[in-house]
View 1 (cartoon, rainbow, N blue to C red):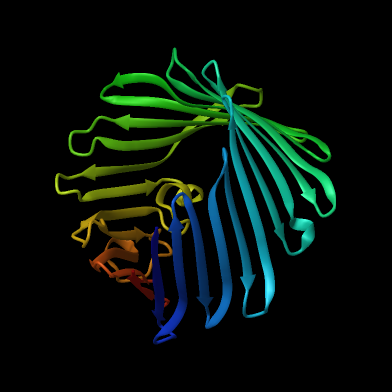
View 2: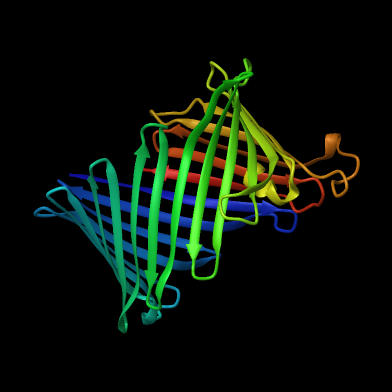
Length: 350
């Protein structure tokens, strides 16, 4: 038998608000053998807006999990979800029953998965319960093309109006292992729907550089007018990481196409990112961490009088100071405006 919990409070400060209590949470868990009962209370914007009770444990060969959520501030029901998992021979079944408000969003979903002859099959069947009606179903398979060590997938979707589409994918197909120290791999996704057929090929180049061996050069192939034809090859970005013996990692990302900024740097407004992350000494077996990133903007829109168009600084760290107390920080400082904000999170464990 065990009993534990955590209390967490997050304080926000920014240019317009000195100090604001953003959110608080209280969670407790009681475990007896293989059974657990958990309670979570969430407070945000000074409102007690979520209270969740959860119970989990085995019932014979069936693994059960049930959660009931309320909004105490409005005395309203939020949701009830119950799931059951069962293994029959080599087939894993999972059933999820979900009730929420409005009732028309409630559903029941039955899923099954199994591996036969090296192919992993997954199927899902989803119905609405208020009223009882068919919503959607899908059938998927994934396997490895061992001759080329590439991942393959095929998935078909159907809805209450009929066939929705079929998607086939291939990932990690090695085009060449070492050409001037560069490895190239190809990912391809083909999607067929009632309205369109879409081919999305993506190339990844990995130079074997001595200083930073984990580097990706991102490229894509523009499909031609005919199916399975190609019109052009474009390189739209580069990203990589350099790991050091002390656990610190230096990372970088560079986008060559403004439309691809989000997928390369993680933020659509910035074309370049430089970052450093690593571990922090922390108490009681907990692994602390820190991360610091600098983002750069297009010189045409970057703030004036900043070094190399540096436009955004972000930082975060998480550390457990004692057995019963932890602390975390996240912050953003945009140089193009005064809309900076810092968050401080305090945790108490027992």
